[in-house]
Length: 528
Image (cartoon, rainbow, N blue to C red):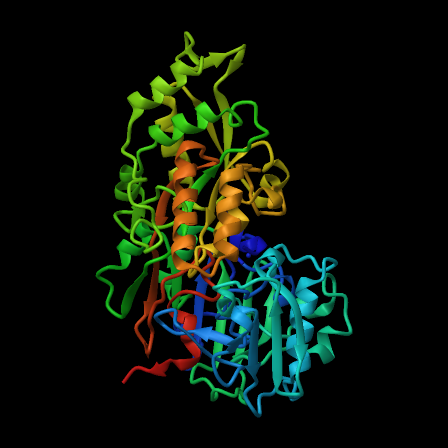
């Protein structure tokens, strides 16, 4: 995940949380905007707009294109490549032929050198890209003429083609700068359907249609993403007409149910909420505490009361309706079982009801990001469930600037989830080699059986072997949880019903800028 993507743990996603913006982003359609523009309220903004640092790595960036992209059903299809890759050498080589006539928004042509530069820079250890491990299979990438690119892998990596949705950047611009600090991070140049016109940090990002886009000039000429951290403020601005649409939690989306001219879009997702349980913590580092919390939490109540039914209980990082889900890992709400686990481990109830062991109280702090009502409600429900079995959890709101330095020792109400192959998201969440690497493996989880399963799942071409590996992984997480998985949430969006062509995809944790009904905004048409 990118920094903001995890901050939506983080967040989301491939993204950090921006300051609340109460000033108008230029107005919605009722505020003077033209009929060919749209203003969307989202909760966070990216740290950077450079793919070299992780922006748009899972596709759907409006500024950039990858070699491939995904359609509404998440099937891979060509983008900057003319066709899907030619695969050779037993799955160790992938050859892409570039689409003819594609130009960057500054008028310079796309060539294979730009593709090579993009991937080599991301893979360079000097580049501050915490998603580099996602491309660990790549041994080499080279140009074969101006229109062909050949990837050579260290080992066959079954889902590699899906990694090539990574946006391509122009070498003639980004190659002259430090990828970590250069102006390209906030002044991007790409081949996508939109160009960045203005970015006022903490307030809004404005994109204008690229008239020379290779896929055809978009009908929506201007897209503004208004950064409004607070859920209630976002809903208020949508109702006032200051916004044309917004990402909203279920309770607020429901208030627009009977509003004429408004439509609610609901998207299934891999996005889940979980509590990180740092192994360095004196309390959270105890496996008995982690197992007891896993049994004590009432997931179904969270779905029903917090999400208003718009989600599913999370028994692990893989959604229960996903083909890769390990049947039989579902767990019932079992506070009596949680008490038995704690009793057996020597955590005895104190006079105040809080358990103690060797002079330590079963108490810890759970941080959640300010302004996120859904996370706040999850945190409070979690603390309530924990209290019933003798564990004192103090839910505390804070900004991400406060949360980040404390993540190693304090629990966090986090959000994760990647679409597609199970390798996407699970490796960075759980592999011990990535412990504490930014928002990767926030719990510093270290389980050799899980590491072996992750490595097998990443390297094997055998579908049966991969399925067995991820099945093992999910069962290990029941025995040795490094996180308490709570809910998989559906994403809800309310938009003015002025356009045709709006659809939803199954979404990752990162949503707002790329995912959402505007994932294909370049294809929208005015409603007739």
